[in-house]
Image (cartoon, rainbow over all chains, first blue to last red; front, side):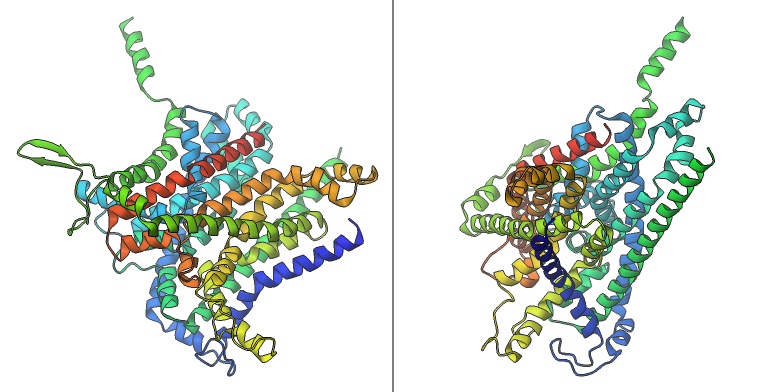
Length: 279
Length: 306
């Protein structure tokens, strides 16, 4: 690349980063603002953090959302990995096109459509079967799981495709039953992808507004629903404090994950060198 | 002999382990993805009613006779009502413009990150980090920045760059800023993934043979990254058509998005059949781009397992 295009590239990247990080910076700085007004700085204070902790509605909603996100992430990892394994193993089975369609559509389909259709299904089920009695944890959990499965499948698939197939074949040649081969060989090899898929699903779930709005019932508000209804009314500095905690958690998690990956890669290089040297 | 026959029959009709393995995720998706659509389709032909749930049954049994009542009224109403037609148009225009702006920002960003071999992973991490934090809170932050007495206006006023506040909130400006901000990573990630795999020797060869940078870009980089461009654009365009939260929080009345109209029909007017019909028409409009997206996903998967 020549010099001038190098310079423009740096400028463009800086502008993009400014655009991306400006809102985050505003959230962090104003979470420590004494004033209730979002646009006036009147001094440093932890006031909104203590208000946040004492805000029962927000705290209950946060705990509820956390439980749903954990449950959705586990369900999505199990079903998503399952789907990836049968796609890797059986390829184009009968009904493959429909399967891929149902699996991938939730990635792009507008959430209002997913939300309304699942709600109507649950209402119909309740009429016909008397179950699920109420909208709440279960219905939101199903909705979030459906939106997350494909992300896990894609993450696992890309890992599976890099994987050395001969390992699995060797295990099977040596007589390992498929299930044992899966748990002893495939699972450890794709563990990093499972963790990524789990974290991605957790984030998608804990952030979801639209599907939760359709699938929640009275008394089962998720955190984003509470934030959303408050934002509609006006700005609320507690949200800045909440946002700062989110940003802090995510930053630590991502940096830790990157360090872990780096370390594993280094270890792999060392192992390979040792293996080569011993020959 | 008889035993053998029974064995054969049993074998024939007991599902293989393969079929059972496929059946679990298949069944889950049929039950919680396919069946809901059939339900929406069904209810779009029902009548609004003041009961719980607020619609009439399609099939009623009276005096031991079944009657099937299918009502096309909601489709007719949606398709002749200017409000709905305008909303569909607005949604498609907004989604299209959002996709275009995301592409104009995302393409160079993805390109530079993919080309910067030394800091590639760190830059990608920095690009993606904001999107792991709550998107609702980021939209909320934009309100504080864009309001009439918000941070941006206060800053510009204090610098004497403007005399009166810019109107950026509760109109198209705010909505587009929010949309582009939120959808940008969906474009950058697939683009980056394609660009990283690109064969750079081709580009070098072109330059060595004396091709101008622009020509090299047009003839080599662009075609090679085309798949990433299409995938990224679909990932932005399709969900953007039905977006609800951003237009609701940052947008105003200059573009009425169909997601908001449907939401209001559903929650404020309790008109579930009309909301269902609106959703069904939205699905029909998006069928083609979704089919294209699906084809690309299948292709990508098959390439991966080659």
